Amino acid sequence: MDDALLRSLTPGVLGVLVRRGADFAAAEDAVQDALVEAVRTWPADPPRDPKGWLVAVAWRRFLDATRADAARRRREDLVDDEPAPPPVSGLDDTLHLYFLCAHPSLTPSSAVALTLRAVGGLTTRQIAQAYLVPEATMAQRISRAKRTVAGVRFDQPGDVGTVLRVLYLVFNEGYSGDVDLVAEAIRLTRQLAAAIDHPEVAGLLALMLLHHARRASRTAPDGSLVPLAEQDRTRWDTAAIAEGVGILQIALSRDRLGQFQAQAAVAALHADAPTAEQTDWVQIVEWYDALVLLTDSPVVRLNRAVAVGEADGARAGLAVLATLDDTVPRYAAVAAYLHERDGDPATAARLYAEAARKAPNAAERDHLTRQAARLNTGR
Amino acid sequence: MAKYLLLKHYRGGPAPCNDVPMDKWTPEEVTAHIQYMNDFAARLEETGEFVDGQALAPEGEWVRYDGEGRPPITDGPFAETKDLIAGWMIIDVDSYERAVALTGELSAAPGAGGEPIHEWIELRPFLAHPPTITE
Image (cartoon, rainbow over all chains, first blue to last red; front, side, top):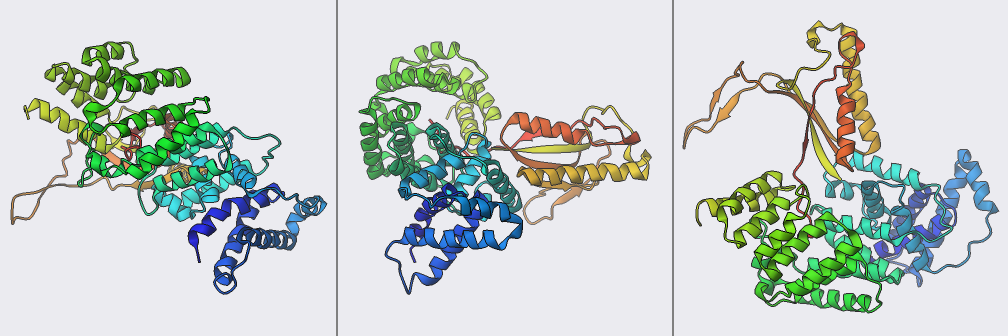
């Protein structure tokens, strides 16, 4: 039994049921039943059309469950009244499900949980472990999310941007427990890219691949962070980099620039440099200029100050920094770095210590504390 | 998505508005207070934001290493210790604003006279997992 095949078919099957009028929770139950049935019968009797088989079995289960439940008589009428569902391509149904699970009426954490459950086919327990909350809490979060989107009908296509923000969150903020959320985010984005032709979807996929390619070199064996300039570039995954760059180039050639393509372009320039010294910082500054126009994000402006510091010297970076809001997260860390490059270790040490106190996670805090300690003890 | 610790102190924070020690309340008021806390936790489970809640005994000791081959030293409790933790709740919420709103709700637990205590609760963010995208 091919678990990966089953998981890749699930969202499309669920999408068909939801489009035919099944409410979300009932549809999911029916699909789960069909999956159990598939695991039981396929090894001896594999279907020629696995997806068609799953849709047929799940739909029958849904109708059975609906009929069996007298309290749901009204829905049964609704189903019976509906004309036979038109055959729609599986890709549209998958897409429909992505939009549903990232619906703007959901909070980010609910959209993430529902996407992983319904599109990704992960169990509630796996999702709870990935976000370090009790399983009961995650079960409630998912069932509330299902209720929130239960009445949503898609008369017009949703905004793909909402889906991309959810997938970005999965990629960027997952813990690494039993389930590798980073790999799962890439899988889901790849599946989305196959379902919709959109340069920003491709841009996000490229961004993920390019960052994922550096994963092995980003932390030392003891778990401490290794800054980009000090990473062992021989450990970067060149196949993932080549794939990311290829996807990005095709996306950029469409001439519909968006923030994920621009971020991926920065990542590609880093990936392309054989050594940290050979990084094309001038081009990176240009991409940050584009990103500032696209997003007007204070975090992007802060990253741009770092890039200017590398391209035009620390003094120039500090001049840009002076124009920014100093309450942006990691402002002190950037200031410390630029002051050290500018030959002022005392100020840098003070700012590294301040940055460590404000760090949003333990790995960054420890890294910044070591930087302050290095400067304070002259090592 | 961020986790926060809501820390209740027996003492150490600024004085609350309704500052009557719990042993001077009526038994019904004590029951109402505990019920409020339980209901609050149940509501958070319902919204998918509850992570953990625990109470601590007020009496504790200080313990430290005392050198190779020697048992740890225990000392205290020290009556003069200013800060004393009563218990905590851990929440997982979408924003800092939501964390503040929930902490305010918890602080409104009823005390003497059935009136909200306006107890000061310490709100501390957890250090998160480092993001995948770091530059």
